[in-house]
Image (cartoon, rainbow, N blue to C red; front, side):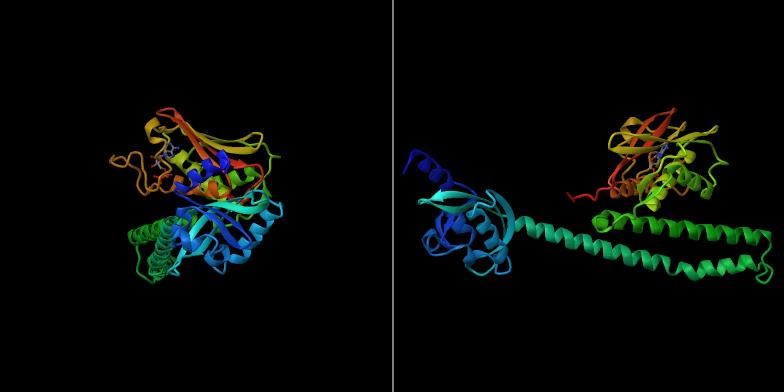
Length: 364
Ligand code: ADP
C-alpha cells in the first residue's frame, strides 16, 4: 500500500459518513460506517453485497444509470438522494457524493454516503403539519364566510326596499353599518385565506404575465379606492412605460401601499407614485409625507398582524397588520420584493422591486 492509500484508508475507517468503492456489482471496499448505515457487519458487506442489494428497487434503475455514466466517463462527479433498504428491511434515506477512481487497474465508482433519514422524517412531518394547517384555514375561511352570505343578501334587500321593511333614516343608517361590518369581516377572512395560500403554496402558483402600463394601473387603483379626494397625489410614471408581470397581484400590492400612504399621513397629505428602472429590475415606489416609522420598527412591519402603534388608543380602526405582509408575499411570488425607508415625522417610501423578466423561484 502506498503512503497516500494508507492515509485514505485511515481517514475512511474513522469517518462518520459511509465510504465505498464498487466494481463488478459488489462493494470492493466499504468503511465500517457504510456497513453500519445498512445494519450490517463489515464481514457481511464487503464483496458479499453490491449496490443493487441495498438500494430501494424503485430507485435502483436511476442509480444504476448514474453509476454507469460515471464508469464510462460521461460524468466525473455526481450528487443524488435515494432510498436504501436495511438488513431488517426498513427504508432509509441517503445522500451520495459520488465520483470515480481507478481501483485494481480499472475504473470503479466510489462515493461518500450520508444517512439523512432523520432529516427527511422531520421534513415530511413539517409538510404534513403545513398541509393540516392549510386545510384547517381553508375550512375555517369557508365556514366563516358562508353564514354571512344570507345575512348580507337580506340586509341588501332591506336597503333596496326600505319602505317594505319599515326602515326610517336611522334604520337605513344602521343597516348600512351592518353591511359595512360584514364587508370588513369578509375582507379579513379573504386576506387570511390569501396569506395562508401564499405562505404555504407559493411555489404552486404561476403568475399570469402580461404587458401593461403601470401608470394606468396606478390610476385605476386610485380611482377604485377613491383616494384622490383624500390626498394630493402625483403619478410620476411616464405614459409610455410598460411592464410585464401579473397585473392582479401588482394591483393588490399598490392598493395596500397607496391606502397606507393615505392612512398614515396627516393633512395636507402628499403622495408620489413613481417608477425607476435599473439594470435587471424595475421599481414602483409609493412615497408619502406621513407620520413615518421608527427605525427599529421597519423590520417588523412586514410581519403578519404587526401594527406599529398597536397599544395606542389613537390607533386607526379596522387595521389588522396584514396589508404589508400580503403585499410582500405577492411581490415575492412575482420574483421581487418590497423595500421600505422611513423617517419619523417626515414620511415613508415603499419600493416594489420586480425583475425585468419574471423568473419562477427555484427554476434555472
Ligand atoms: P395595517 O392594516 O395595520 O395598515 P399593514 O401591514 O399595511 O397593516 O402595515 C403594518 C403597520 O406598518 C401599520 O399598522 C403601520 O403602523 C405601519 N405602516 C404601514 N405603512 C405605513 C406608512 N406609509 N406610514 C407609516 N406607517 C406605516
